[in-house]
Image (cartoon, rainbow, N blue to C red; front, side, top):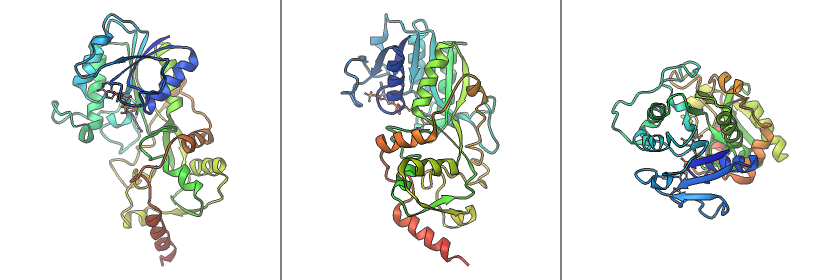
Length: 322
Ligand SMILES: NC(=O)c1ccc[n+]([C@@H]2O[C@H](COP(=O)([O-])OP(=O)(O)OC[C@H]3O[C@@H](n4cnc5c(N)ncnc54)[C@H](OP(=O)(O)O)[C@@H]3O)[C@@H](O)[C@H]2O)c1
């Protein structure tokens, strides 16, 4: 398959390149040549800024384009229009953040967030609604030929966000580990390598439409896989949500994979229906492999996860409660 990646060897894009090369696909990268430019010297690269600088794509054809770096509909519209007649399938990496609410489990048919100001391009403030608008411009340019990959938390090697990464490194350092109770709470995430491989399979199979792309696990599975991969024999301290709330522990980033079940806007964020992607052959490697890959190739990130001091204080307060 001839593959164009709008993006490059950062995180998910890197997994796409690896998956495509492993399949024997012909790969072309389009990016500005700034991020990890020394990687993949043998892969064809076209340089340009996707905002206004797509001229290098003219006159070329690919079977599939995978767009990992689209955040703003005005910009995504440029590539969708430019490529409409030169690719068969446009795989747009979207996000489960497109949904208007996670008060209850979502399916692909659930309402999406809408931009209050359609001209906004402030990604930090309107990430989900912007991704939803990007999906629409891709559909408009390539009706019936777009795949919207609504990814959940993407994890694994080269993850720059540090969220899932917190857990393998935390378990590796041993001792008493604060874990949000109950251990059987559902959590969802997807290894970038599984997601990347599946996007190529789905595109080649001629799939179209939106797919929630994330995988099922529990907090217990995560801790067990971390223990298995590290050989660490931590003592798990299950701390309940009332205590976490009372001590103003931040869900999702300060305590990764914890979503407060009392939060009416977010509580079902890790109970997303993924049956459509599963039916289209999205599969997951054993969790222990994801943990190993994370330990080898992803570093903890400041601000993601409890600091050792904060965790210690919380554990002391938990043990001292009446
Ligand atoms: N992390 C998560 O948990 C999560 C969850 C759901 C969805 N997602 C989605 O997953 C994707 C993340 O993929 P990623 O980390 O590999 O990609 P990314 O950070 O969005 O894109 C990085 C790549 O795109 C290129 N790029 C950036 N701006 C460009 C521009 N103006 N023109 C041309 N190239 C440009 C960069 O290369 P140069 O710097 O060399 O140009 C770099 O190689 C995003 O779409 C994100 O929204 C992430």
